[in-house]
Length: 60
Image: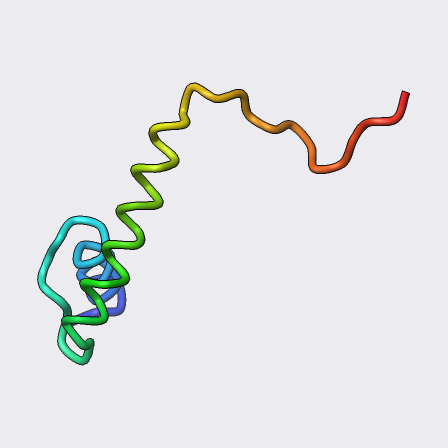
């Protein structure tokens, strides 16, 4: 299995409830995946919020 295929399997496990790839603890992957999905859903819920254009206040 190529690196690309292994990475795809890990991402699938994290964000789409796919099976944990070989060499990964299924419980840890499931826990990390729950966090990833929660963050994704939380950000999607705020998609209508205005986006920050800069980190520092602009000086006039």
